Image 1 (tube, rainbow, N blue to C red):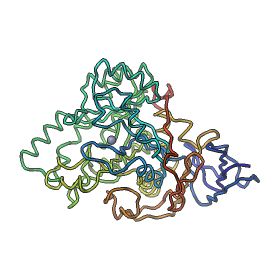
Image 2: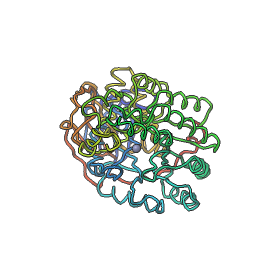
Image 3: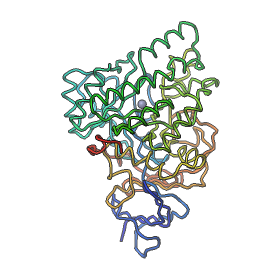
Image 4: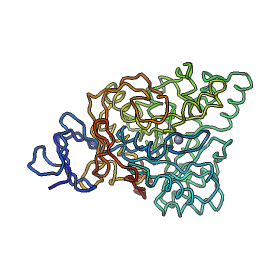
Amino acid sequence: MFDLLIRNGKVVTPETVLEADVAVQGERIAGLLKTAEPVQAREVIDARGLYVVPGGIDAHVHFDMEFLGQSKHTFESGTIAAAFGGTTTIIDFTLDLKTLGGPLLDAVEKRREKAEGKAVIDFAFHCVVNDGGDDTLRELEQVVAYGVPSFKMFTVYREVNLYVNDATVYNVMERLRDLGGIAAVHTENADIVDYCTARLLAAGQRTPVHYPQSRPTFTEVECIRRVLFLARSARAAVYVVHIAAGEAVAAVRQARAEGRPVYGETCPHYLVLTKAMYARPDGYNYVMSPPLRTEADNEALWEGLAGGWLATVSSDDNSVDVEDKRAGAESFDRASPGCVDVETRIPLLFSEGVVKRRLPITRLVQVASTNPARIFGLYPRKGVIAAGSDADIVLIDPTARLRVSPQTLHMKVQYSPYEGWDVVGMPVTTISRGKVIVNKGAFLGTPGHGRFLPRAIDPAVLQAPV
Ligand SMILES: [Zn+2]
């Protein structure tokens, strides 16, 4: 007698699609069964016509964050939106301007406290490092031992004291190599970004349409190449967050071809939107860094996903609302940067990727779930439908449609970058550790169901690209 049986669905593994039933016992997957095998279960879900995929893992979100504007999502509302979008695990950051500069482990514990009792799905954190002092380098070990083996560094944002120089990037990478950790780096050339920004503002070229010129493509590509070079020199693994430039894909591809443990992330907005958005009356809503680029960049990112050179698609969700973004109408530097995508990440990958571009659904599963699980030390507990794994399962109806708007989503903001888009293929049921938390538009979960996930990264991930 199983607790839950998902019958007649098309089960998507990272490699293939199977006709199978999925049996769940308690919080775990008991196994895959032949369709219609005569077994009993307390609850049966008929998944005929639906894809049965491992719950999404969004390795880059910012909930309840005060950083150049306050994000609207709490850990409760943000994880509810994530669950509606087919995501069952989020990885947030210790990005809180109040804890920056203090002990790293304190910052982790403070963020954990914010999420405990609120999150409706499981959660983890990346630890932000903004200085390369001896204390910090020593503290890395404690944080890894606590179950947080991934560390975020920013090569920009001097104005809020997040910027780190090349020496810190190098030193932290070298230390993490010995500790079994990984650096996740935001890559833009700060000197040139600051220079271009000041020059545009001084020339009165302040409206959002000028924003992309403040952070030209080469500033991203140069920094990625530099960071990959530093990682090679430190013999360390590296994860490059939110790649927007097509040319950066080539850099990641080359490093991986050399057998180096390099992982590239992109986001739905960089795949499907272009800088044409900045010419709209609400162009300020698209102020984010790096900025949106061109259709050629979109294409190169899709190729990077299909070809296996980019490893993950994350949302970089930062739910700053229109009231904090609108100031950018007069001067782009006054808009709180960020984009909202935690609920639309998997629907857009399905609709724009699987349906429009014939991206194999196995590849969607890899970039949205399996790869983030592997890279960040959650696999095989998460990221796969297999016996013994957590029963984090999502049913996608390939025929379900959604007209995107703030009203049809569960985001706490009054805009969507995709407002008016018609998306086909939607997550309709979301199961977190054996419990159905979203079904056919209804939220059935509970705040506090989500648990903190201590992690340890598989050494194979840190030695060669997986
Ligand atoms: Zn981010």
